[in-house]
Length: 247
Ligand SMILES: C[S@@+](CC[C@H](N)C(=O)[O-])C[C@H]1O[C@@H](n2cnc3c(N)ncnc32)[C@H](O)[C@@H]1O
Image (cartoon, rainbow, N blue to C red; front, top):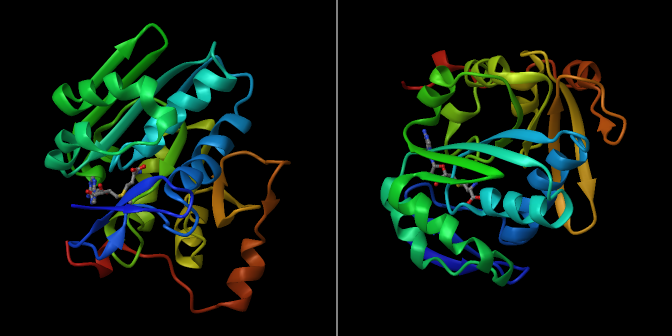
């Protein structure tokens, strides 16, 4: 595992297996976490006093820790339930030594508990990191969830976590007001979400590349992606399908 410093000074890692970084080095690992996942999650549920978040996949735990930081800073009364599948158990155990940004100093006990037992709990927080395949996890998980951070390696590197069938399982888990946040703006990704009943929105702003928010409900604060127009302009575009991948 190679640690790599990203543009905002925070560290990410490079995976030789997937030939990809865990975060965008250009947008900055921490910046990407906040802008593409955590800020939209809270902005779209400003009055919820209990937020249930699926974090696909745990990786270095930046999305989970950024969620704790953001809650504690701006929504201290909100209680959190986070569930995160991760295939690489050795990675999670090794995170005790990861060079996290200074703002995560208050959460080093959280990372230690997650690395040792896969669980962390206090009065306002319940986190489970399960060492398992996210496909299986999404089939077996129960309940209704408010947010899914879709932060797997890219569709080309890890296509099984971007198919129409995969998103059907995610869709089943989402509450009526639920949202999926992702860095991917690929038409194939958006089509896979669209075919599962999501409306697609553009997440754009200063200091990060465009991203996507997929929602069960109409959103006013994000620009809607006109999917029918995109489909008309790209008639041969298709979502990724399980049946076309080696399973
Ligand atoms: C881009 S990284 C996630 C970064 C993470 N969200 C963070 O904030 O640090 C992708 C992660 O997906 C994990 N992974 C790959 N395939 C998986 C699968 N089928 N099920 C669960 N985890 C998987 C990899 O081990 C890697 O840790």
